[in-house]
Image (tube, rainbow, N blue to C red; front, side, top):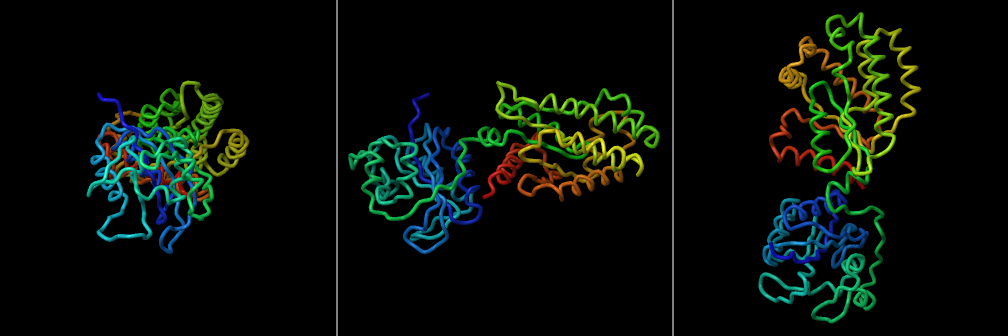
Length: 379
């Protein structure tokens, strides 16, 4: 394989969820053009050449095996995928995303398809400022000046304000910045499968619930009234011990943690299975424990309809789950959704995956990753 070429791009957005638009563009560029090797700071900038909403602007550098015209083609495809359609005589106007090719190595090119370096970059402070973050000494092959000199000489008087949040090169960096992701859901929702897949793909430590060896679980499904309290107390003790031990410190060789449960599920299930008097006692003990545990950076709830859950449960073939019914699963769903009404909106995500197959369909898995990133990147 030939040595990769360095491409430098300018990104901008002033419509919709601007921060997410920029980050989604970076993820798509990483997938379709090549690995992102550097990202600048993000700057809030006034619209340039027209009256419009404030932009977010940034620059990135990418390593690619593609030729310049191929890179340009991919940029246009990504813009279109994100909702922008460039038209003839489009001019200066608001846009969901703007991706400009500034440099392709030191190539000088003037053709109907492509002009390199970008002919306007030296006049635009919203390009030069983030460009100076990642390539301060990059030498303009036509003007014979580096980025810092061009920025000093630029007559654009626009005031740029740091946005205060970073661009991430890939999903791993994004998830790492949020330290701890919890994936929750009803019985058979797929939370363990998704947590394990994310951990494998992005080098995370898994915190997985241990429940198969709980001696009260098979008995509970046979006689719920008799075994509900010892089952819930046993689960609470086991979850608290495991959770505190597993989340106490990050594995030195892992980038973040992902869990397939949250301790709060103990209270949700207990509220369904216990009598009123038992639940009051249980809640007192639970409240003391819950104060001490680590809270996730984002709480993801995988919603599936009770009928779909029953299909998934049947496929697992666990004999002690054979008596689970639709009504019980609906109560659990309702308990989780009631809990999430009390949870900070910016730290939760409810995903309806009833029609998705993220194990066998990459597009479904990519959709889930995209929804998670969209939630994490709200302005």
